[in-house]
Amino acid sequence: MSPQTYGKTKVTTYYPWGLMTAKGTRLLCSDGVIRAPHRLASNADTFFSVPAAMRIKGKYVTGYMTTEETKVAPYVRAYVFRQHTGEGEMLPAWPSSFAPEMDALISKAYAGGEEIRTGADL
Image 1 (spheres, rainbow, N blue to C red):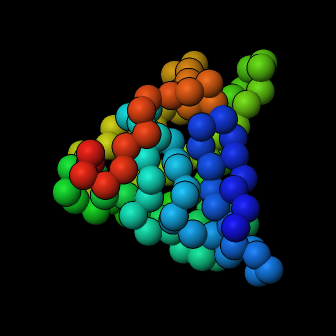
Image 2 (cartoon, rainbow, N blue to C red):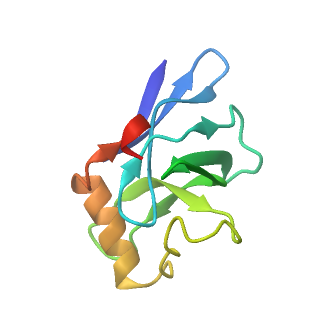
Image 3 (cartoon, rainbow, N blue to C red):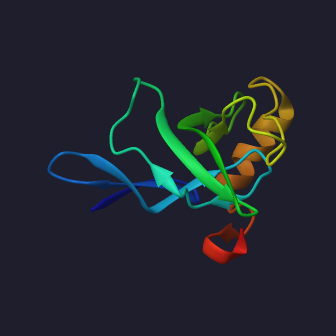
């Protein structure tokens, strides 16, 4: 088992095959909270994303895990969860990739972010 981290966000990978697991993984959500995914596919479905699901306030929100990077120095990255459209209002919409709010979210997650919520906290 090997965690790959960007600040407080991380993805846990099992070797020798490099399969990802939800156990130990932490993703930044659009509300600024770093959460553990309920489900995470073991393999990527595309080069840039991995199917995932979060449990928020007792409901499941589907989407995918990817990485985002700040557009201004200092350049930092974070693993993020992006929900599918039509998933209700459980999470706010992500700001534009070029908006200062996006850089603020990623920088905050890299530096420490909100408390990490898992299990019953959601």
